[in-house]
Length: 383
Ligand SMILES: [Zn+2]
Image 1: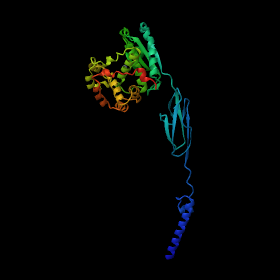
Image 2: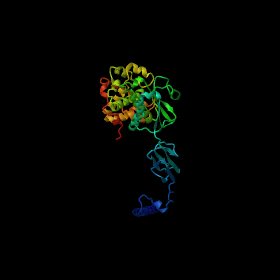
Image 3: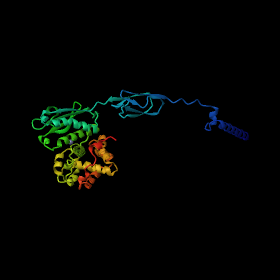
Image 4: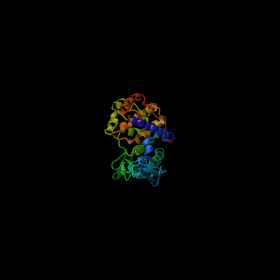
């Protein structure tokens, strides 16, 4: 027993020396038994290849390579000028950035397509021939607005929309385009042959001296096209947002280009509009259902609402230009729909709709103070 103990101790001491001597030359972490009986080296990790290419019209951030199993690689597609990214062959994602975990050999191709110019096509009826100056001005007004608010072809979920088919005529006789566009007056009314239909019905009275509505109408309907483009087709029908903004744009257009700065007061005049009652019934401005009777009772407070929103955004620290860009562009880019628009509203504007509706009371006494100082061109001027 004693002898055994001694031997054990001797072995222990010997081991210590071996360990100690090993430690001085090699890694501390190697245990003595491993030194004595080394195990075979662990197998090299499995590797997979990633192959990334780009179709015509763009580039990718990497061509890929060979990676250890489980490696995450992010690849990004960038369209060339005049092209847009449409998706990936090899993956269902529609995001330009894709993060891949290599668990097999994988191949991706970024796909791009040529952006076709968004075109306005004109069907201007001979009933407008007495007002040739106006007929001619329609395309130049839309050209001017297109420079401020560039529109590209887009996919609305059902159709590729590559332009607007404009139909305009003088009311009086039977509607000349009814067999093509239906019984319409003034609207963006559906899609025919991949173009939005814009219906511009005018009245004799629109051509009286000083009657500027005929130009306001062009800016108004153009802005609807812009809203629809930014949201890739309207999925929501919030009356006060859609129409109040278009009315704001038409007012700013007349002020800047037709020298009619008083036009906006048609919408902000307390003699015409019952702001108190309008605010008390503000939710009836959320839908197109019965909006005519709502406006008949309380007046059109939709501009007032959008201009109040612009003031609130300025209180939050945004410039006047930024505030209108948030209203006219950022909100629509969220592609709001009828079920989520209040959530999108709060995300974009930093205030809930109910709080916003309450705050309208702060602006109702002097709605004329809401008239923007900034011009339409300045709002959309590129930085
Ligand atoms: Zn409208």
